[in-house]
Amino acid sequence: MDAFYELYSNPSENQKEEGLMHARLVPHGTIDMDKLSADVARSTAYSKGVVGGVICDLMGQIEEYLKAGYHVELGDLGYLSVSLKSRPVHEGEKLRAGSVHFKDINLRITKDARRRMQDMSFVHCPKEWSRRPEKQDYDPKRLDEYLEKYACISRSEYMKLTGMSSYKAVKDLNRLTEEGRLRRYGRGRNVIYLPINANGEV
Image (tube, rainbow, N blue to C red; front, side, top):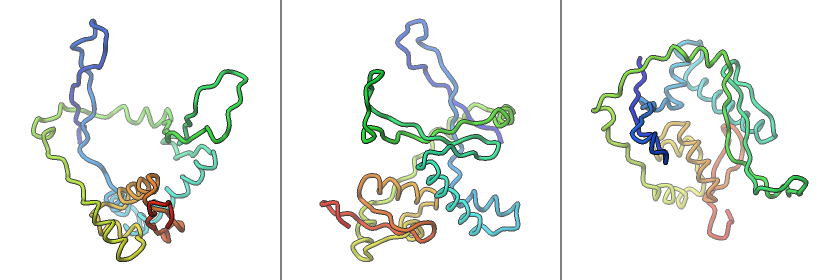
């Protein structure tokens, strides 16, 4: 399948570069955890559920390694690493550990992976494709109503509640945890999420 691209104006204050365009990928969509698990399962002797469970456990273990300060190798695809943010300091000036914070997770691909990707083929994005309507988000009040009734929620129950894939559900639950709305307990398949009140208490 060919990948789509579209042309976009270069954001620049240089008058010589005004009107210049660059190509940007227009995705066909997002491969969620369900499709990834199903596609892997079709080419192996494992079921979709087993593949999905292994991927979830793998992601959890990778996060633990990254939090501990390790780089993580993903075969010959590349390496995952953590980037940091802090206030700028002069050479020789001390910086407290509390002033250093997580910024992002970076992927540095290998030369072999870069070479394998060179045979990508592209076609200009059809107009009808770029005008597709955006998928509407679910009503967040449904989560509040659920937690008022059951006090906690698991990843699988959150998937049923929102209609999200496993990957999107985990990502959204992590976001709610970072925002201070939920607190996570357990590990792997035994993780549950509890609501946090205005006083920061569960």
